[in-house]
Image (cartoon, rainbow, N blue to C red):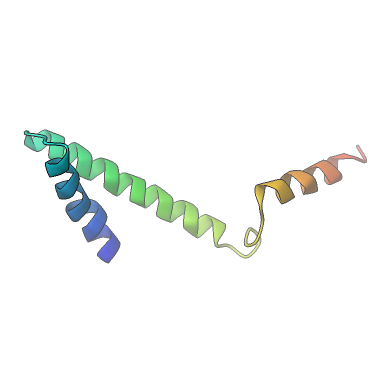
Length: 72
C-alpha cells in the first residue's frame, strides 16, 4: 500500500516539480512510468524469492548449465 502511494503519487509529484514540467499529461506519464517500474521490480522480486531460485547467482546458474550440458 505504501509503495503504491509513494511510486504512484509522491515520486511523480517530486519529479514533476524538479524537472519543471508544465502539463498534466507529463505528470501522468511520469506517474505511469514510475508505477509500472515499481510493479515490474516487485514482480521480479517475487519470482526470485521462490525457493528453487533463492541464493542462486547468474555465475552459478551458468556453471550448472555448463556442467549439465557437458556429457552431451
